[in-house]
Amino acid sequence: MSKQAFQDSYPAEFSHCYGCGRDNPHGLQLKSYWHLSADKEHTIAHFTPKPYHTGGVPDNAYGGLIASLLDCHGTASAAAAAYKAQGRDMGTAPILRFVTASLSVDFLRPTPMENKLTILGEVIQLEGRKATVKLSLSTNDQLCATGTMIAVALK
Ligand SMILES: CCCCCCCC(=O)SCCNC(=O)CCNC(=O)[C@H](O)C(C)(C)COP(=O)(O)OP(=O)(O)OC[C@H]1O[C@@H](n2cnc3c(N)ncnc32)[C@H](O)[C@@H]1OP(=O)(O)O
Image (cartoon, rainbow, N blue to C red):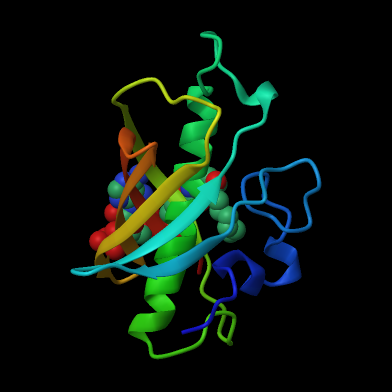
């Protein structure tokens, strides 16, 4: 299985996303990978917040940051799952690129900033151009946020 980050397979024109573009020096530059756990095949990404990613409450992360991390991990997971379903390596032509059609986030508890965050994704349905992705964000073994995304492949 490739250890290349999903986002590093994106063609140059898709490499400037604020959340995950490798060519956006002002962005979060999130990197997502396949992650095999005992029972399921997930996708995984990590992110360590900087002090300026805080929200209104000191030492806790800004909710928009959390949504951004789920957003980019979700669309990357959708693309990876779609390539896999077609038996193709990511980045091969024709390019499959997903955007967010809908994203809901439940903020379960404040997200502390001092540790690495773990973002997990699971593509639970792929149908036509549409992928449904379950997402979570945790730190210190505590689940802080969950999300559900509908991602749609660009025509
Ligand atoms: C690309 C680089 C990777 C980085 C991405 C990072 C994540 C992002 O931030 S992406 C930016 C934010 N998202 C956007 O700007 C998307 C804006 N919206 C759009 O462009 C369009 O509405 C788009 C592409 C989602 C869908 O439009 P279109 O291509 O015409 O598809 P359409 O035929 O309407 O829908 C396709 C399927 O998706 C479903 N769908 C579309 N929108 C939704 C929605 N909001 N909720 C649920 N289902 C939806 C439709 O019902 C349809 O399903 P089915 O095939 O079962 O009938």
